[in-house]
Length: 120
Image (cartoon, rainbow, N blue to C red; front, side, top):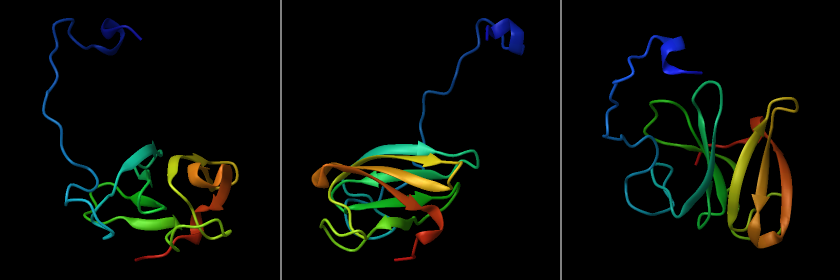
């Protein structure tokens, strides 16, 4: 859409200052930290799903949260059905209510139910 169709002035300016919405507490294994985050997905509720490469998990950060929740992986590095190995990207499949994860270290793409998460 053109700016004029949204009543946005042609000379509008935008804030050039960002805010931290996930992590920002140094690298590590805490749910308030990220350790080499790669791909992410933002759903309709502004929840962010992050592929945390070095932690071998997918973490969910709800809007305004100070901690994330592990929703896939989190069982150590490996190739088991409950493990991830260096995940690179994640999307949410609304039809099946699941996460589709690019599991780089295992050379696979997997589907994980969203309700299978656990608090760490």
